[in-house]
Structures are given as C-alpha cells and as structure tokens.
Image (cartoon, rainbow over all chains, first blue to last red):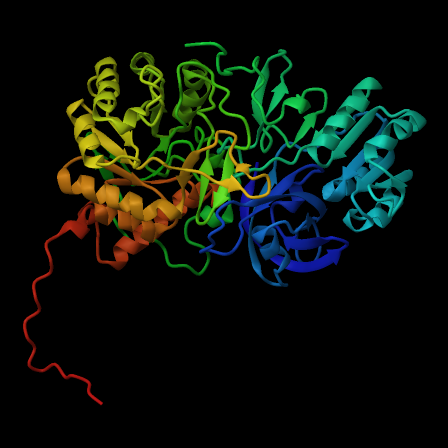
Length: 284
Length: 341
C-alpha cells in the first residue's frame, strides 16, 4: 500500500559521484522494506518535467525528532536529477511510496552474497542489516567504472563479512567487473542466494552465475518508468511465470525485484515471439 | 485504509469546499462529478484507489481493452518531452475475458462508475467486444478508441477518416444494449475534427471524447536513432492543452447539445474549467496522474473552488460559457476619471 505525502528535505550531501538526500517521509519510511522504492515529483507545481523520478530507498529511520525519514542516492544524469541535487534543507518534496515488491528474505540462516553496480549498492545496506539480524552470513561485492562511482564502500565493509571491490579502471580494488569476481566469492562462502541491484547487463550475468551454482537470485532492475505505480505500462520486461508463460510485466509493481531465473534478460527491449499476446508472425 | 494526506479534501487550515452542484450529464448518464480518468492513464482503477477514493470521481475510464491478450510494443515505450510525454505502449492488455472477470468485477464491487474503453483492429473485433460487454453488468458507458490502425485498410487509423470512424461506431452501437451510452474518442490528427464528430454522431454515438494524443517523435541524440522502439508515439500532457481546448470549442460550436468529455493536458482545476467553458460536459485527468496520482480528486476540488470563485452554483451553468455572446458595450460613464499625468 503506497501513500503520497508532502515531505521535506533534511539534508543533501555529496558522496563520491552521487548526492545523498535525506527526506522526511511520514507514513512511508515506517513500512519500507529493502528493495522498495519511492518516486518524487520534480521541479515544483508548474514544472515542465511531468514524470516522477524513482529511487531505491537507501536507509530509513522510523523514529527521531523528524518522525519517519529516509535516504535516497541520486546520480545526476539530467535536468530532473540536477533539480533534486540542488534542493536545500526545508524545501518541500512530493513523495509516493513505498513502491514495488521488495527483496524476499530467507526464513533460514543462509549464506547470502549481495552485488551492487555503481549506486545500485544503495538498497543493499538495509538488506545486509536485515539479513544479519536473521543470522545470515552476508558477503558483499560492489563495482563501478571508477572509485568515485562506487557508493558507500566504508559502511558496507562494516556490514559485510567480506567486501570485494572492483573498478573498470582499477582505481580501487580489483580491475574488472563484479561478475568477474562473483563466482569465486560465491564458491568460497558456499552461497545459497545472491541479491543484486545495478545495470541490466550486470543483473543478467549475476542471474546466470547464480543459476550455474543452483543458487537463488533476486535482482532489482532499473527500468525507465513514467508513473511508478502500475498504471502507465512503460516499464515492462519479459518474465516467465510459474505457469511457464512469458508475460510483459511491470518493473514498478511486479518488480523491481525479480527472480533472476525468471527474467529473459537477453530479450529485454523486445517482445519474445512466445510472449502472451505477442504479435502473430507471418499473419495477414 | 490509509490514503494520502494530500487527497483527504481540504488540508488543515484550508477552507471547506464551497457549495457547488458538481453533477453533470452525458446523455442519460448522470455523474456526481465531471472529473473522470483518461483511458490508458488509470489502468482499471485499482492502483489509484490507494491514493484517492475512486468512487468519488465521475467515473473510471479503463485502459482500452481488446478481444485477445496483447503484449504491446517493445521498450523504450516512453519519452519525457517539454510539458508532456510521448508513449508507444501498443495497447498491452489482458483481453476482454480477463478484463471482465478481474477488473470489471473489482470495479463493480468497489462501487466505481466504469466507462469501458474498447479497441480493435477490425470493425468485426469492435462488434465482438460490444457484444461481449452486453452480457455483463457494471458498464456505465463504452468509449470507442478509434485511434487504432485498421488492419483491413493498410493500417490507417479509423479515427482519421469519416467512413471508417462511422463504421466502427455503427458496429458498436448495433451490438450494444440500445440504452448503453457510447462515446467515440477522437484523434486531433485530422484536417477537420468536426466532420469526424459529425460522422460518429450520425453513426449513433451518444457523445465524443476529445482528444486522444497527437502523433509525435523524439530522436535520441546520443544513439542518433528514434528514442521509442515504436519510432513514433502519442504526445500528451499540458503541451497539447491548447489543441485540445480548440477541438472541444469547435465541436461545441457545431453541436450545441452533444455530450463532450474534454481532455488533453489538464493539470489543475483551472485547466479543467477551461475545458468546461469551451463546452465540455466532463473532463478527464490523464498524464497528470503520472505526475500526481491523487490528481483526479484534487482537480475535482480545485474545479469546485474555481467555479464558486466565478459565482457559479452549478457546474452545468458553466458548460460552454465561453461561447456566450459578446458582452454589451459598457454605457459611457460621465463620472469616469481618466488618470493623466
């Protein structure tokens, strides 16, 4: 159940290449679970940017002087994210959340590996904490293009049994991709489940590596969304259901977290011919 | 049920809503509020019911449903544009049977008034949809989405030609309960929208929904290719509002009594008032829902305040008010003082 509330900016701070925004979000932060996201209206009442911007929730504080607050991590990519990064303390902000299906947590004490690409590590902090509270072993792998584009490595070191870092240019940790080191990490800790958030190609590789090791994978996707609440049908991707039928599912409401073995990763951006309701080939 | 603070009527410190009779009529269909949702921006109401009470607005106009399940187009399906957006969804949907069983049943049980939008690739498909809907309860009206490519005529959109627009509406009319109100949703991408309105009215439409999106295109300057997988898409949002107001105005000029649902870039109560003054009997909130999911209720409240602010005690008195004869020249006033330096 999502709500729409008028929140307030408490703080905007830099973290490497990113901005971390703390917002009051009464009624949202109290019920947010790891993997949930929120979306924010951009540019004020007369904004020419109509579409809300969606962000995975990084941290929540449900009690405190401000009541419920939450943190999001913003990567400035265009005018909307620039506007958000330019917010100042006490500015009002229209927030809808919590949105989407969060990560599914195991009932048993399992060994979990968490994988974050770039600021995709943001939702993994809460997840790591909650997995540890359940007695799970948590190992973390994060990677990015450069050291600056890694997010929160110091804090993750505190939350994880081990932290493995990769960068494309070798500016921190091992040179290469997270998926270069993931097989070794999984084998070393005998991983039962992998949780991942990051770019699609990374998620596709994570899902494949997990499947090869007969481990579960839970992948949080980042798709372009117009509404974030399930009404616009723009953020769809092909996903195989329990009945074996492929449907175009909404990332916002049926995701953003999907079982890695259910998503047809290589066919994202297409309608696979056997999708329910796909155009009939060779018809007249 | 917890709902958004923003949608709970007046906020603390705000005046209660002034008394205005907000009811409206679309032919024989009476609605307690003139605000409905625009097809394709509200799915089948369920998601929006988290943010406001969907039974409190005029009606939920559901996303166009087809006979069979449909996957829609590949992604990207959307691009943000200045004060608007382009979409190219390709009518993704579950098909009429699933829609009736799951969505329509839910809407009925919830107590929402439902206008069912239907879409098809052939006249026969529209007939079958109408026939299927005739067998079920909970349909307040049918909206015929004629902005679909006609499979039998080189993919030309039904809405763009008087003959095919009329054929579709006639087929729906013939297969529906004779009392069922039928609205044809018109495309603005035509030379003369009034002649299309005339054709669908002659074919038996109760009224018209004006307007559907305008065809547009965005080229991604990074990839240097069309941004949308479907190449072109429908432009919606405040960017198209003046086009929509002009279409409502022209149709109202031609048909003094035709029920019109006006839409296109309505963002607040004042925008809604603009459509009412141009001649709309009801208004639809569309793309604004993506910006503010509580907006249909907010627009209703803002429209009520705006009407009261102009001294209207009934919404129906404001419909088409902008078409009134020019105000008489004021009598020369001898006491008027010119301010001169």
